[in-house]
Amino acid sequence: MQKKDELALKSGVWCGLNKPGMKEDDADVVVFGIPFDGGVSFRGGAAEAPRKLRENTFSSTPCTERLAFYDKLNIVDGGDFIGPDREEFFNEIKEYVKNLVSMGKKFTMVGGDHSVTIPCLWGVNEAIDEDLE
Image (tube, rainbow, N blue to C red):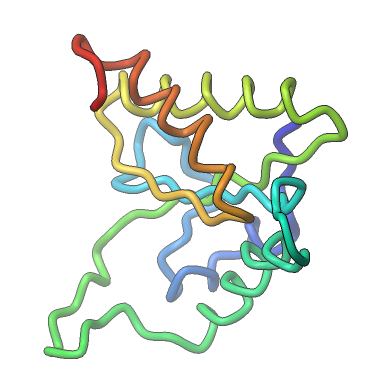
C-alpha cells in the first residue's frame, strides 16, 4: 500500500525541492520510499532509512560540492510503500515504477533492505522494450 508520510507532504523535504501538490507526470524526478527490512539475514533497521533521509534533507541545500546548483528541479515525493504482504506491495511497487518509466520519468527509491530493489527492477524491465540485463 502506498502511503504518504507527513514528511513526504512538506515542501521543505529533499532540499526544499519537493512539490507536494505536483503530479508525478509534471515532476522532473520522483522519489519514493520502501521502508522494509523483512529480507535481512542479520538485523533490521534499514526500514527506518526513508524517514531518516527525509528528515536530513530539511537542512541540506540543493547544491553539489562543486557549487553546481540544482534548485530549479521539481521533485515529487511519492510516499512510502508499506504492507503486511510482501508479494502484494512488491507488485504495487513494480506497477508504480513501470508507470514512471513508461512516462519517461527519472526516479529514485530509498530503501529498506537490498530486496526492495527487486520490484523496481521488475517495473523497469516491464516498461522497456528489451530485457534488462
